[in-house]
Length: 598
Image (cartoon, rainbow, N blue to C red; front, side, top):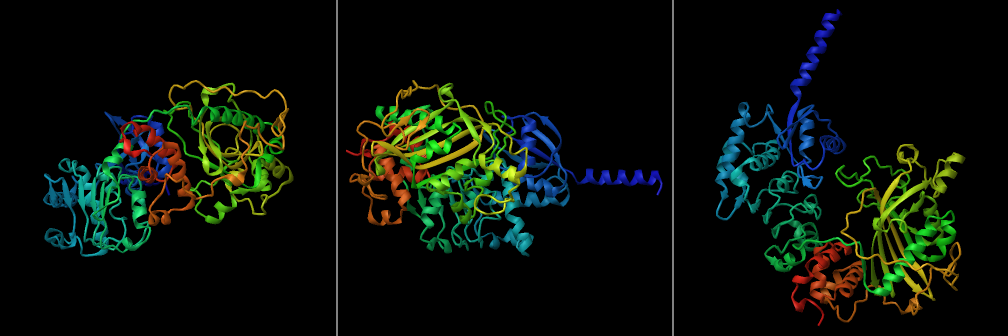
């Protein structure tokens, strides 16, 4: 083969690759840099966009092929730097302005406009298989054309100016088994308020899971004559997936006005919150002494006496990378020391693995401590870098402390060092270490981390025990809370106290006692028991788990809301305590007097 021919073949191949490229427009990306956006697409869609160019508020770039362009489009509506990204193909050979594709797009546009009622703001896409226009066009001649029809319709709808005010969509009588073909509805009409999926073939409880928290304004959902409605968990699942749902199958399940009261008020993040002055003093002493012991070389020896055979500890690694616009954000975090032990339920789906990674009792907790890097916190040197909330936990006559802040990793984990020196290929429970994070030097780099740590602390015999300890490790960023209130100053312990802090650490008796806090654990309220002022209907209480009942009790005692409002607050927040407290703090001033215990 001559060089001339070789060059011709190479040129032809390059021309073919150029011809296969698809141009993509990206909207709502301006809160970050162009490189942040390209990295986001590469990391999530696994597509490298080339020749990026900013045209006004839009970034234009090329995907190597149409298939890869479609992979990028799957990320429509993704959260990025505080906005929802919107991708669209422009100048595509199969687009609306080219060849026969144009006539198909115009046909779909006419179908949409003929089924739109501008007065009611309703788009009626029900019984499309019986639509004469669709039948004549052959849209239902084969399963493949039928499968492509809904995505195409929704794509055309997203570009049609007359449909931007749609508030209601009817998708009844379309033989839908799930939302695979209509998944982009959430991107096309993100502000949808009413949705009808009646008379379809939806049978699985998780069939709508992909829409979780997507329709943030959906108030009414109609699912009658679908098999899934017979599931005992159907109602609670729909309310979980759609946080503002008020009417389900023509039955009111929430009060829309009360929802507005909970969700509409702005939230001002505060650095410190304590239920009372005594808890402020007690919890700051607890946290200060605990972190001093945690950062010491004798972590296990000083802290293990605080844990009982029933105490639990776990670590969760949140490996997401914040945008570069976040203050002081680490754009290259390393989580190799944490991922093999993480119980992040968004990443770990195996129930067995989740159970194995929950340390219970002193022996397992000691092993878990030794699997984590040595650290140095700066609570006393930089108190404004930390935020803390302390609330009473009356179920156990104790309190819960939630601490947010950062720490510096100062040395590799003790067990990791021993394993490396001995060449051990197995972890402490006899399982082979196949996780790539364990052997990757880059992912095992020591660095600064942000964290959230939650303790449930129980006063006992003049001291304390830790019933639960959860550590969430995150990519480092600067704090986001408001200008701080006065910081409670921990009172240093100058001398050993019987059963309390001893020089150099924590004595077997535990952390320094609180006067009057010598409450036997037997006096605690039994798990799942409800206070007299929080009485639920028997059928409602029977459907709740012990964890949900405990959360209701905690919210009730914290907010002083009556049973009805407490239940609604917990339900609207997805049974997440932090979200519920934030919602209450934001809307408390707008609640009627009868919302509270009289």
